[in-house]
Length: 250
Image 1 (cartoon, rainbow, N blue to C red):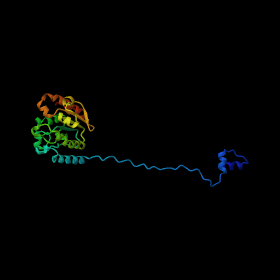
Image 2: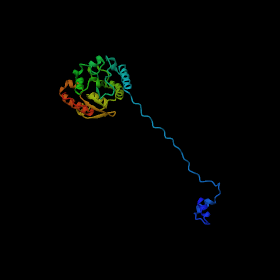
Image 3: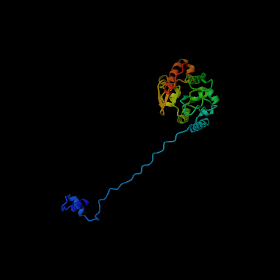
Image 4: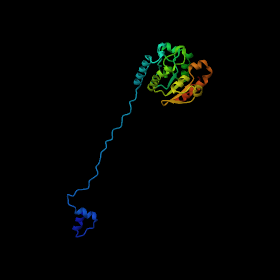
């Protein structure tokens, strides 16, 4: 409208314009204006906080609570023949979690995994050869109670102990699991009897996204010392995975 007034003040009596412009100028002042599209404001929720991370103290509490639950467990018949349940021992968030099939008779007597004298003390020697102290790794077994006459644990006992084992793995958060023997390998990984350690050792697999290395059990090594070089090869693969230097002598 200002443009038209300007041309009028300069003596012009005709102003160019489109039909739409002329219609708009001819419309009454209070004519309804075209409706403007509604603007909807969408509230974006704040991002969800990250899940809580266990501190070492919280992990220790969980592990100790699990150990107490295992010592009091009576879910299978082995509770009637054991002297002590053996939950295992070691630090939180260990580099390595060693899992055997079942406690040795010496472990049953003390309630401590890898007791001195069990299987000629081979597991402590293996751990030391890797450059670790015993209290720097966690040692346990799939079945938490020893069996009479050191027999293989019955399926009932392994099934009863499976939730204990899974809960320990979740609480410990180990970097690597070393399975000691065919019983531990088949029991944890649910592999058939055809997956003997002779075929599965030396090859990485996983359990709940944790790297797993199967090797021979100390009881088997004690009976068949010729497998020691193969066990050492497996342990060196674990050390390499963890970035740990290999000792000069083993």
